[in-house]
Figure 1 (tube, rainbow, N blue to C red):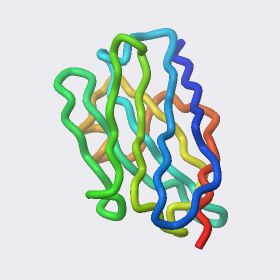
Figure 2: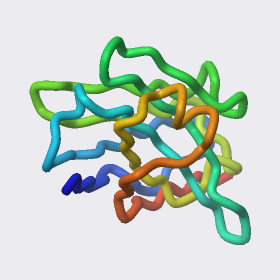
Figure 3: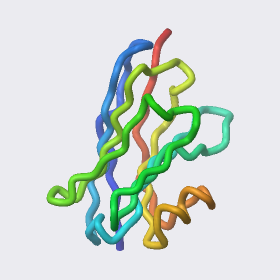
Figure 4: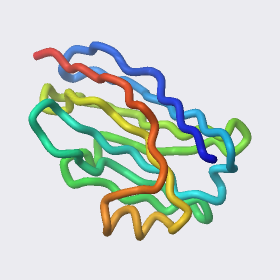
Length: 125
């Protein structure tokens, strides 16, 4: 059973930066596509980014491209989302997700098999 635990959320001013982490257990992340999604109040869940377990290929939502970077540390079995130039519209609960079917699947289908409980990110204007 894959377990995902997010950390690092918080309150930041617009234009600032924040990094959220996802510690994974039960399976090595090199065998999984690891992703971040987010959900703001009243909105549907939104895909943010995904990274391949095999070759590190990444995909990003257009709304975060150039500002957010997803990365992984296989030795720590942890995935990160570095968020720069944050905007108030980035405010949401950020969820870590994992799927054995690959990054292309997660990017195209916009879902995943395993989910964390989420971490709140709030960007003030």
